Image (cartoon, rainbow, N blue to C red; front, side, top):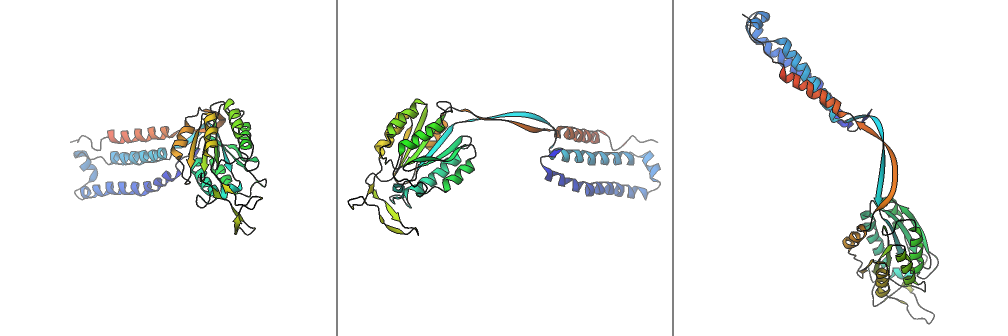
Length: 334
């Protein structure tokens, strides 16, 4: 037997004092009559009936016992139940290149992107979510999973030192995500791309067209300043050591490429979300994702206990009805 609400059984501890109190009060009610004479003779000439009072008390206590058992929701016997879960497959691709360390968004673009991703992931419960990190190349940080808490753990460890190959390859990230979504039904899958839009000859628009051919929508989120921002450098002790410079000794400016990100989204029927100040219209993004068609993500056979509280509740109510029906008095015999 399985008890769903075992704490309800603690109320059974109250039955003993309740029974004692009932029978004590019944006996106390008889004492004044006993002082007037023989109680049996008085019962014959009055409407009193000690036996019925005791029966009613027993029925009341018994009914409360079974009602408390019903409240604990006992279960016994099992049945097999097939549980199907439907949703969409969402791949979150995060740019972890050095340009995401630019400080035009405090504390930097990458940290604000991670904050937004944490909120986004929690809102995608019921869907399968995967995480890809990319810089000069891309790799799976977390495969597609229904475990959103696990996804959040992988998001926490994203940093700019994760991928040693420098640069930014948007096309690689899109193609890797598309390959991971190849077995998902069309129109039931999407890629969320968080980046500043910089790319080093990876043909992101071509990758977006390939994704669109598979029925994948891409939602791009652009972090940064269209005017450009220098890229900070840090030493082994994580102390600021200057700004990144090109071969000519000029400070490299990281520019938010909104035009490319808008074209990538448009190629797939997705949408571009600017995050110049680090804030994203998450409500609109989540609403767009929820409009994706649902497909079956998993099917499991679970063993479930059968509820049997109805039996105890029926017995308890029947005893309570019997206690109500039985009269406490009888016709007087003279």
